[in-house]
Picture (cartoon, helix red, strand yellow):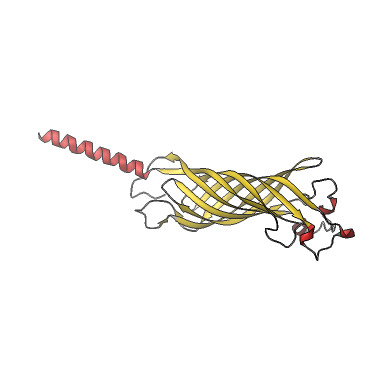
Length: 235
């Protein structure tokens, strides 16, 4: 009788340990979808933020380095457009007035820094289920011109806010700015040559290069589980 009771107690403790181990298991990745708007700033829109907005959609995949730091890859497809008529005081050579519109693929390799220790655990008093964050990293813009496809490198930076809704589901809002190392995002059609460095100021790369921004909402799910950590362990 004594041995039977002891055996039942051992089985119960084993089950509780396995449940605790499972609850302590961590997810080192996130994957999800995003949707929002894309806008352009450059020679065809120098002063108006969100002068013309167009839809965009995409996907993101993240690798968690720790509860504060992630590495993320975004792939988005949107549309950018602009019109020099927005800026009435900015006269082009020969008073040309032009516009453009085209699809744009955006690929970013971003580093994300959470302001708070982000997670779901209730036993760790430092863990928050919401946090603002900043992102930065290299990006690539891909778009079609009349003479072929253009692949342009650039830099991206932005800020966001996210909430952990359940243990594995996250939602958030983000706004990014992307600086391209080119000045022909808006020049890609025949007849729009006026938008390719219209003032011939090649010495000022920051002025001449084109920008675009992405404002979006997203939903991601934690994935890629790794081994659990005991209650006294550190992440």
